[in-house]
Length: 469
Image 1: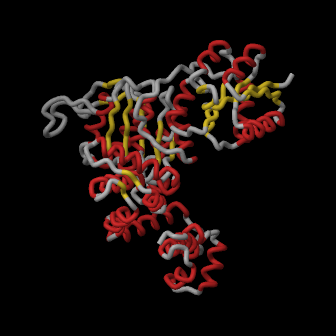
Image 2 (image 1 turned 135 degrees about the vertical axis):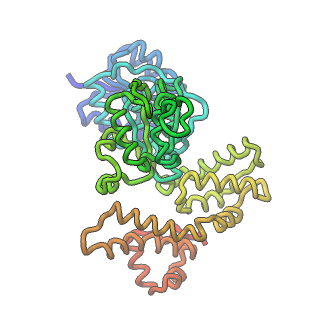
Image 3 (image 1 turned 180 degrees about the vertical axis):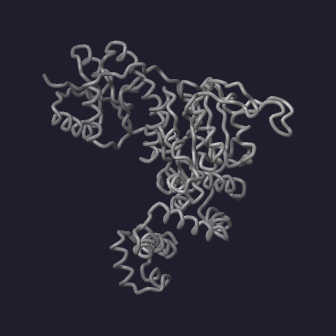
């Protein structure tokens, strides 16, 4: 006998596509476009798996799942949603859902999940999760959906998490979200920035010290590990931790015990560990400046935070969010014009979300009108340090980072670097000239036909830059 699925989806086109894919996999599919219809079907038929949208014409698919879970505790549920926020992901996970898929989703992945759910049934031990107000992460881009899904998978366990991302992408916000939404939320959240502490003091900061352990140690001090007992210890910029501290940290993670500096007694630790770095640890491991065994101990669940340039659709919502935050902190209430938002979308944001936030706050403070227009944003961008002396250093750093990651083959370095450099150069020229190819070619100092040929080869659409100048 084949597997059966109940699909609750009010978008007929999406429902038709999912139904066809499930039937091809061997499922018998029953469909409903409402909560009422869902309940009528569940009253008469036992299904191996249910797939449900969140927002339906007669209610919220998540809020009404409690009664479904009570009546059908062995039926796995897969939640689909176009409301692609961390709040939705957490609510979905809090119901004990087998899986959560933000729209648009990979159809093959959805079908595989339905097959696994039907074969294995509901995972055990999935309790409800509260959703606190003011969740710290914003963004509905596909890249952020991956982050949300990873966050929801570590909320009910103590697996060590390693957050990877450029400076300013919000690594500490992710760590705070895991803590606030997880089962240790009633414990403390303790953060330590390894790059901000002198190397001779970092072991004392981590593990504490006994009175007289060193000059100036006039009394016993409790370190971050003990302060975080029952909660979460966030180790930021772990790539900057000195070698001696790495060794002691590894020993603590392996044994679950620490010893204060200058002490003899071992103390059991009870803290969830979340680490973060903006550095590429692979070349550091190869160079011997970061312990490989510590990396594997930390890299149990890696979460990569995308840079802002990879989540363009999130820039405007973030900017408007920061305007509301600025107003709540006493700055004038401002609005963002459509042209200003479009201008923000086109920026490279080397400083990521932190750079965007700082610029929005400056705009809220300095704007002469209630509405921040493109001219005001353009002026602030021109005055930004990144537009002056910092740009050259940023470029050199970016090139060095690219060379370190790409590692072109011997003899191919020159051409590989040129290929990587050429596309953003042409895009910059088109942005400067509003998509005018003749002017862009003149700006670049090349023939117009050469420009056209390279635009085609690099798959750059010049119309995308129309009116940007």
